[in-house]
Length: 382
Image 1 (spheres, rainbow, N blue to C red):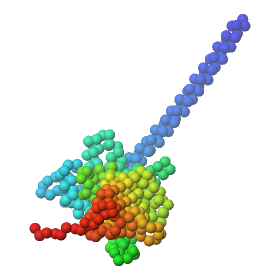
Image 2: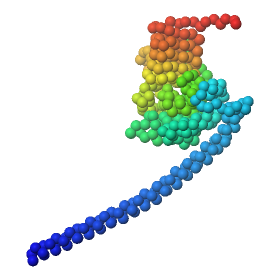
Image 3: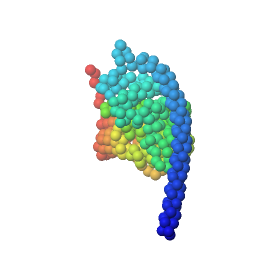
Image 4: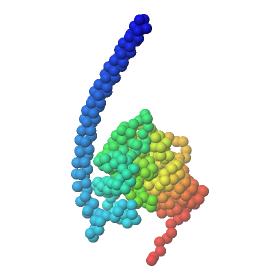
């Protein structure tokens, strides 16, 4: 009898435990279902907001496209011929022939529409890059937004999210474009003073970035599409990062933040351009690794340089020019080093691995260590 009583008690306890477990599972399932419904409702609301945002962007893009199509038809369709396919030799020659047109600030939307066309072709031809191209180009409303998105992705770190850098980049591009207080300063030939020589539209705005992008397409034989430079060429990325840091340094007096952007650019892109340096629009840095441009250096418009170029200082005098002044149209060969407050004249060429410590006249060539000046050839009648 005792054994049977124990068996019955054990059976009742087992049944109670099983019942409690069933009730717990049921409660957990109910709670999970409720959470699932909450999550679904939240996702629906987020999707609705996302769709609304996408619809607004699509509407804006369509309006921009309709306004720019006439420009494309006017500038890019002549004699009944269609625009060449992006990436081909004909397309490169055709776009280069329209450099003067695309350099105008009012034609930035035309350039943006060309980049969007190139992006759409890449997204269709390479599915693995479709999401990247859509996020970087096709989902953006302007060229400045697209460049800001790319630069923010390059410079972000765990402590500074890309959204913060994106807003900083947009602020720099658009604020500088609306400012008229940017100038390039050149060193006088007769003294060490720095004097104003002309007015430049901007050093850190949207128009400067536009000319930098056009310079890559115009002077780099390896670039066959604008979007290649926009997404993949770190020389262009380094110039954009510099222009953001220069805006923070020169116009906002936020020097610590400018140093942070400069530090991230140096670490990620291996290009060291001091935020206080002055680099004019239309600059082109090919390969870019190891380029160093010092604090008081001045680089005019349309200057080209290759990797490992150094614009270094001589002396430790604060507040006085210590770095070179490079005038417009100059080409600096790979590994060339320019030291001290010297002047490199317009359209001069510096040979690879040359050490330049004296002034170089206009249209001359400097080669060697130390560099020797080769005067320009006399023009012959032909």
